[in-house]
Length: 385
Image (cartoon, rainbow, N blue to C red):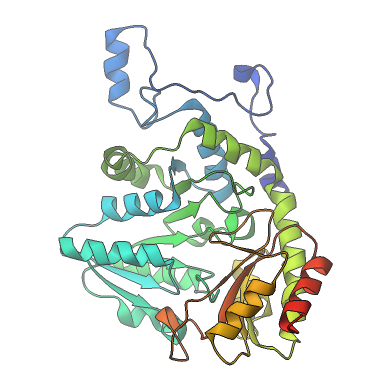
């Protein structure tokens, strides 16, 4: 269930329009710098570049509108947008960690995030990554120098849930900062900051944009943490979001409530179809998981259109043949757009691959073509037609 307040935030209905002459979407402030009336005003502004319009690498009027809406959706105090989701994640980790620190990664984590963790190990920052049954026992993996617990819920590829409130409680008792990648759920279906998490990161490229035409990321947190992230990670790494892309994300936000509702309904229909198909061993969808029903009902307001299925096939070649015979599912990375997409997990010999990903798994992003058409396409492919 999407809250009415969130729909109004996405539409911009709660904002004043006087400063943009009544335009529903703000104009694109295609400016690299902003002139001040005096030297003193300029110098004072430089001290508050996280709030003042000085240089668009720092703050830009179009990007600021997007940041304010995302902060409101996540119920956070402050948001900063980045040129990509990985730019956002990199800035969080680089800003909050130093040599000798330890990061605990909980649940299945986006691959490049773990690759970044491996890179940080060169600078004396250690990490532990847990998934599967270990997620429930995450406290056993907290070390004396753990400074950050970073997790996903639902997790990448397998879409298992992590206990958000328990992670928040355990971290606060130990003075550990918590960060969740909330991209899959969107702020419409999950509010981790309301459950005590310190930071939420997003790839705006997915459901926020919704049209496969822009790349971006975001961090939402408290003003105190954001000031640290802004000056340490954001400004020094230079991963600024372009104002034109911010405008595209603002346009995407206006239709996001309607889109994710449709994604949710169609994905559930497709998931139920696959769960009953003899060629499918298992469907990995949070709403269909009996073991995680309590977490799903207490942490989430719904779920959009991304899930996986494990097929009953002989080998990776048969898996790819089924994927290739799909007519309506594009073969591409990413997800969250209007078009349906499919990607197989890379072939591996063991029953489980990295982070416990089952053998012969395909990830499906359900688009807006309609459930009946997609089910027919899947039915034909699984039958070998």
